[in-house]
Length: 286
Image (cartoon, rainbow, N blue to C red; front, side):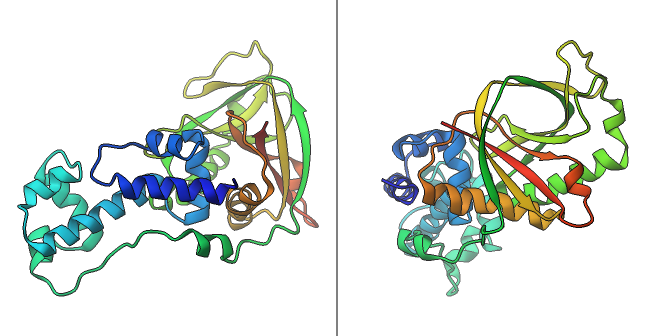
């Protein structure tokens, strides 16, 4: 069974349970994957988060029920697990641009169809031929950094993370971190929740007895084996394409299993090179 098979299991489970009170944890469990890891694979392979896919499919089926006209709007809202008619109205209007009552009267009905797995297997993927890989083992280390919160919903993280880095560098926050082990910068991704919100901690590796400056946090990384991806380029697009390649192409097609630990970016002197700039992405593996 490959990762596409796991995704197919997840899609089948969601389609079967659109009117049931299921969560992302339930979906990943039925795909035989950890929630934290499966969210990333699903997002980069399908283009949608698990949360977003489930929401879109429920709203599509709710729209179909509206067209049939056999149920009251409040009953349809409850059927698809919206706590109030108001929350259903907001979600429906955000998705379709009209209120449920107007949608029912309209002849223009837009659907979000069930995803088919074979086109996902065969779609053109990001070229990773220039990305080098190596396996290393790292002992426990400690990072002090500036924390931020973002989400994968609507690709908000792709806008937020460059902004977080811009603020960090623009305010020279690296200088506020004492007892740094080296001059490298790291971005750690952690504390994922069911709705694909997560923390981004930008900072540096420090000595174990370092005092935490105000406004910063300490984050301890446990010993782990990593697949290290050396990504050419130093633009935001280069880095993002590296992540998309790892979770959208490399992971689904190599059979490696991800370890339950945090992944991170590392930027050292090579990132500022005028000739061949590059950065590293660390993915914990079993």
